[in-house]
Image: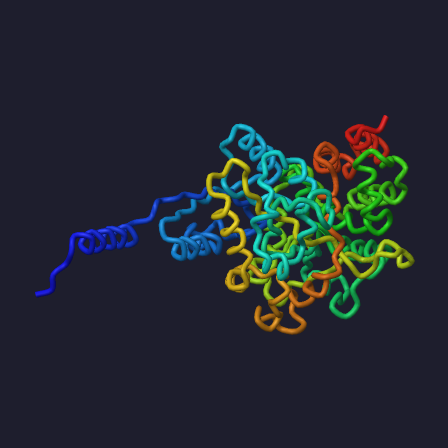
Length: 435
């Protein structure tokens, strides 16, 4: 019989106790995550399904499985504009969610006092393989503080169109799309002539002017340039002196005046549904809506990029886009490393490919190919993908908060003729601090 000394027995007991601790349950940790509905990780119609069928819910379960003891509470923010105010308020009170899905650019720059800087927490491999970091670096500077992760998608703005309606109006946009603003206006006139609303849009839903922010912004960027727009929002130059912007606003008004917009766009909130039901020819969109539209319209769904305002301008063959959504970590979180690990997980190659099975959009990773994503040549998503590296960053995200609030909320008054472009830009200048 083997004999053990007292020290040996104590050592065995210590090892046994450590083994029990290691095999026992780990400390329970709960991360609370706010996600925007319909424009980010949750597809436009996903919320009509049970929550456990959503991509992001399934991704959270995979993260929990890979990190025993961790649970994630998902809270959907239906109003993206209000989500930013709510996050700021919660952050100041010290009870913000651990992770929040917010817009990139100025909206998060304005909340850096409640957002955790991530410079020392982001893995080097993420900095190398994920693009769009400039959208979450303070001040858009190459060395600016990292305030979040670009969400794992590259939202590109375009117009969906109904091929059957366009064909009925005597046009073929697959073979000959309108390439100038003049050709575009003429095409809208032909559609109106057959008794169909040319453009369906809810221009005040969620307090955001979707046409101006997703389509007409491109023309503003063409005529003025992002750098000048930044100087205007900082009060260094005047919006009132921006002739390009005023011309774009005049055109915005003309679309409504000529009957090319739906008449009730200042109060409507069902334009996407109306478009899917064939009630209009065009709908301004971003790529997160594409999969649902293709399911509804099938081969009748086409994509159209905004035509050029002026072919002589420097910015051509582009559109508004880029990582418009971010994932930020609250400064009050108790689990900063785990929160960043979740952000990194959602941006990982495996999760990007998993998300593509439910909602298709160009991605922000350099190591994912169109072939891996299963995109057929000539498909709508393949056409959009061509702009994933030539986009002009979101103009509305360049605007500081007070200026953006005027832009989002009062722009529809310009379109409907209740406010002049001059009065509108004067309000923007006032909020920018111009006297």
